[in-house]
Image 1: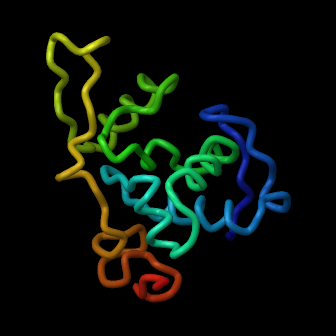
Image 2 (image 1 turned 30 degrees about the vertical axis):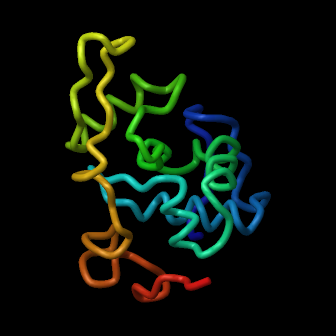
Length: 144
């Protein structure tokens, strides 16, 4: 990781990069690769890394996610992050993330992310451009 990670108060107090466990650093690095307007699920990140699972990624995001593009790491059903819905929604609208409007019967009438259109596969249109998806390993997915 090349830059220091500091908290913007989004999801928790993030310690500086020197204090991050290796797995947490790798999770946050992947979160930062997700292009604006796209998302990955907790499980997608675990699969992309080839280690851990959705709960482990969720724990990393809860503890250290303020130092990354936290709003781009989401639940698989597209519901917005509890307690941060409005801040995340502002980011999604700024970035043009595809959303599905909520029905009137839904509590708070908050939209969901349109996962079919917004989900990033980790290989196309990445932060470093097309081709390798911004992957530090040149586009190779880790295999179990």
